[in-house]
Amino acid sequence: MERIERRGLMAAMILAISCVALPAASAAQDASATRAYLRAVAEYFELPADEVSILADWSMPADEIPVALFVATRAGVSPEALVALRSSGRSWVELTGRYQVGASQLHVPFAQSPSSGLLLTAYEQYQAHPPGKWSQVSLSDQDIVTLVNVRVLSSALGIRPDDVLLRRASVNSFVEVYARSIG
Figure 1 (tube, rainbow, N blue to C red):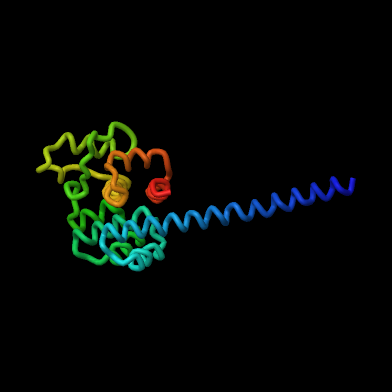
Figure 2: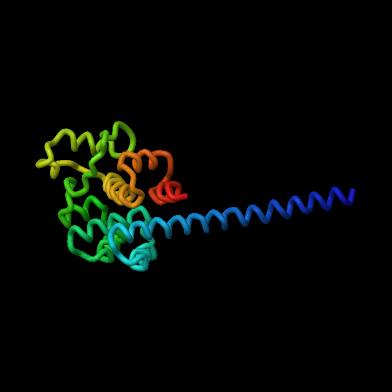
C-alpha cells in the first residue's frame, strides 16, 4: 500500500513539474522563434538585428515590425516614430495614408490571385482596377500586415508569395510561418 502511495505521489509530482515546465518551454520556443523571425526581418531591410529587436521592446506585435520598417523606408521617417504613432492608437491604414505609402507600393504579385482567406477582398479590388488606379484600392490593417509579411518572408525563405500565404492559413502568425519553414 505504501509503495502505491509513493508511486501516486511521484506521479503527482511529475505531473506538477511538467505543468510548470511545459509553459516555460513553450515560452522559450516562442521567444526563440520571434528572435529568428526578427533576424530575418533585419536581413531583409539590411539593418542590424539589434535595431530591429529594439522595436520589439516597444510592445509591438512581431508581425507588425516589418510594416513599421517598410513604411519608414518608403516614407523616409524613422521606424521609432511609426512605432510610437502606432502605439498611440493610429491604424496602419492611417499611417500608410499619412506617409503616402499606397496600395501600389504594398502590392505583391502572386502566381494565382488569392481565392479565399487572407487578402481575398484586397485582391478582388486590385483586379477590379488597372495598376494605374491602384490608389483606389482600400486596404485594411490586416491586409497591410499580411502584404508586407508575405513580401518579407517570400524573400527571406526563398519561396513564392503564394506559398507564404498558404502556410499562413494554417498558423496564427507570420512568426510561426517562419519558424515552421526553417525548423
